[in-house]
Image 1 (cartoon, rainbow, N blue to C red):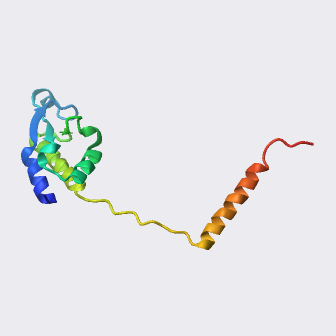
Image 2 (image 1 turned 135 degrees about the vertical axis):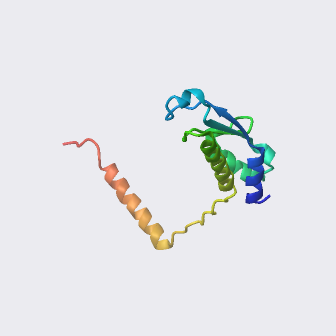
Length: 136
């Protein structure tokens, strides 16, 4: 499954619920549930194991033990803006999980570099060995 298909499937399977939000909104905040909580069962998307592992790592504490990703959006004053924000964040999370990290190329020291490193370590060790109580 490619990235676009996974994002579309995630947005289709996501369940939204509106909750009371704190923050700006005046009296409106007491009357209208403007914050959005989006829940997605990450196992239901059908991701490859390595992509799922990256998603789990990226989600961090936003993923429950049951494998559900829970995102809460309460930055805006309207339900629709918060809903859009939550869906965008969820899509970005799934997209980011599809990006494989670049493999690290091993660095290799040449002979001169090794000799210099050993020489500096010896010098540092000598300095440390000469510390301590001075006997008269």
